[in-house]
Image (cartoon, rainbow, N blue to C red; front, side, top):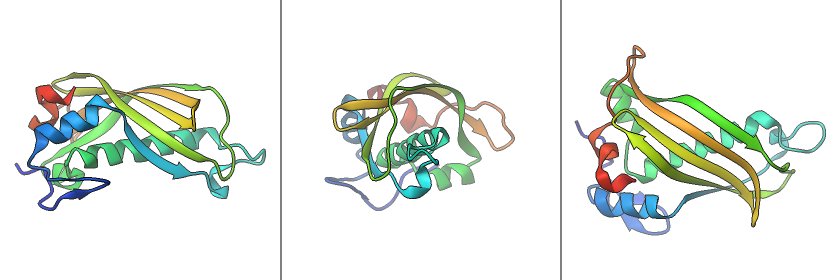
Length: 158
C-alpha cells in the first residue's frame, strides 16, 4: 500500500516523502504552522470571525499537516481508510477580525494504534485566540475502526 506522494512536498524546504523519519521528526518536534487571512466571508455581522469558522481553519491546518507528512489522503481513501474527528474540545479565548493574519499551530500530543490526538491553537502574532484538542480516528469507509497506516504509527511521529 503506497500512501506517499511520488513527488516532493514543496514548502520552504524540499523533503522527499520516502524520507519519512526526517520529515516526521521535523513536523512533530516543532508545531506545524499554517497561515491564513480572515476574509469578509469568515465574519459575522459584528465583524468577528463566526465561531464555526475556527473549526474550518483548524481542519485546513490538519489537512496541511497530514500532507506535510507525505500522506496522500486520496490514496488512503482508495485503500478504504479515512480519518474522522472523534472528539473535539474547543476554547474561544479572543475574537479574530476581518483582515487579521492568523496562524494555526498543530502539535501531536498523543497517539495509539488507531488514534491521533492533536493540540491546535490559532494565534494572531503572540496572542492566542483559540485552543482545541482534537482526537482523530482511522476508520474504514463503512465506519469500522482501523489501525493507523504504518507511517503514522511510526515511533518517531510523536
